[in-house]
Length: 166
Image (cartoon, rainbow, N blue to C red; front, top):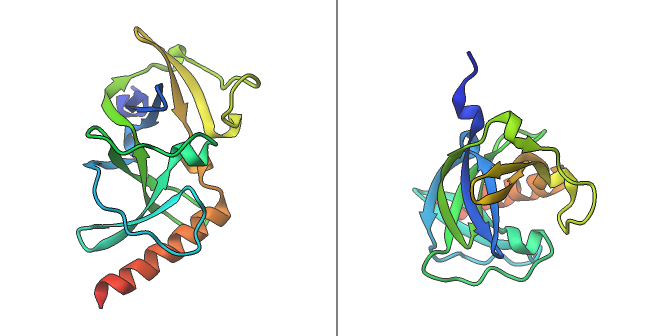
């Protein structure tokens, strides 16, 4: 019997589009909180938040995907994710316009990522899930952060923890 958590996804909105990330990658969902900006970082790198004494880098997925910056509103949330990289696991927060619910999408309801007509690189998309409300873009969170970015995030995470310790 297959573990049903592999078919469960947390759904959220970015720029009026539905996205999803595997539940097993989600550590927690937080209300938007103040983000400390770090100097000399990529535009999509919003800064870090203090999560129970650990510095967690926060990424604006809209900017990472070439869209406009996420406007902060009452539903803006930070999804804290466990990202696997070649250099080991990294904890990363991503901004979402709003977070919805956990849905189950069976493999037979997932189509491969389209090869054209999307502003998102197909390497970032695990597939497109079909639901009653339309299509949900399932993100491959481990591929969104390439190894250089993950190493940069890991270094910033360590620097932030050092700073928080003082």
